[in-house]
Image (cartoon, rainbow, N blue to C red):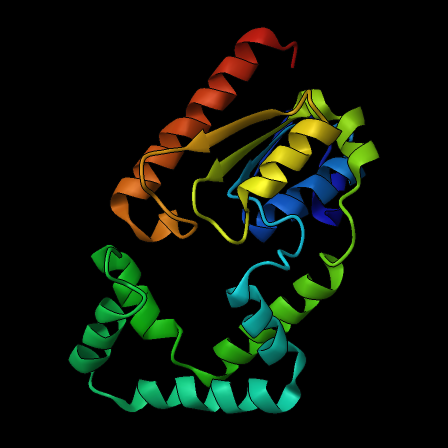
Length: 212
């Protein structure tokens, strides 16, 4: 934020965030109202989903130092396995549709103690902040600058929140991705390509009707 504020440039900023990045992008829009002209949230994680069992489990682990430490050591132990075995485990569990690049990145970086501790620390921080009600007043005041893309079955960005936004800030542009991609779209080539085209289309259309 301080770096951006210190840049003496007139080029408008387009903010694009995925998941918790959508919340961060909204905060940047709040702090840079003149420079940030457009905010795109992809599969946005804006508030805790208390109906999600997955989130409830992650919350319990992230909020417990003991459980966080145990899980981090457990995940790190996978890093001792031969790469081919580790890759197979990833592919059969979380990475069934992942691209080769995503699989390699997962095998290289995820099974490390400090990586997992950082992930859980970030999760704990997110859950503490996102237990609050979204700032609807701010969204209404900036609804012409905000657009969100939701998935059909995404516990991080449930359609219940989609419906709540449409009620609280009806001017925000909302859309639902129905191509079968997931919250982790960036781990697949098809998902990455579809979302990239969607974002490019949003920026192009907004540019055509705005006076940036």
